[in-house]
Image (cartoon, rainbow, N blue to C red; front, side, top):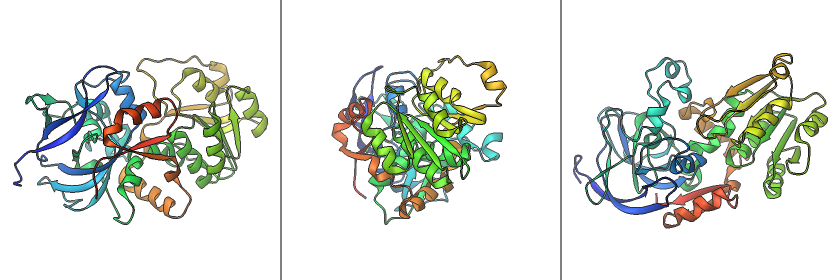
Length: 375
């Protein structure tokens, strides 16, 4: 196939707010100069995909979503030098690479993060996918749109990985697992001997529990209302678990720590839970926020209860991690048995994408991963 030729593939398209994903025949073009065409092997499903489907986070529809893709490089644009065809890659978030935050080592907080990840096109407004009628479909979601057999990624968000581990295992490292572990190790910088609380035990919260153990926290407290999730957290390193339906969470955390927590991470997106995460902190404690509610969501806080103890509230995107170095670090932790994220994953066939999303929404599956192709 020539470098300028397009190809017919299958992709999952969401066409209306809250609608089901429909797998359709589409055409995908070749990579632009700074892009990489990736043959998708597997893609994780993340809460952000669901939030865009429901338009709690805005992105134009119809669109191909998916932003935890892993696959094999098929072709590269003229300016791409970091990967070559045949390389195995995990794809992560998009960033512009030219703003002050990108240059200062914080690309996850890129000044242009919204158009880069949620714009539904390249920066010039073009897209890479058209449907069977020749109509352009919004894509480039997180610079990948990996609910498809092929994806057009940017050279900045592909991370080369060793070929000895299966891509269907590595796929969710690109967002959810990176977010939880990075929040602990990169953004909050949880310290040895400290106390840490994870509110919400989905993939992000459980990744945070594993990372807190790696960081050397001696009190790792996991909070959820799902007994099975609490049991999993204990098996993955939590020293204490709290069922939020049965206990005064803040009082219990103060009892366990003796003074309030040093660090907390809110991963539910529920305002009342965020208030608990702030209230449970001790003096100079820090609460990180990774749970993503609808835009405009507000939470009330006790101002003096934050000011006098010197508490800090920190917004965190993608764990403030630089994917090109952090994802290989997580893989090494996995190899050492310190980050057993494989326990969170359940695989689904691509055709069952809507069932996988439903199982994620109702808590049946912690981290659904779609099998789309073969390496």
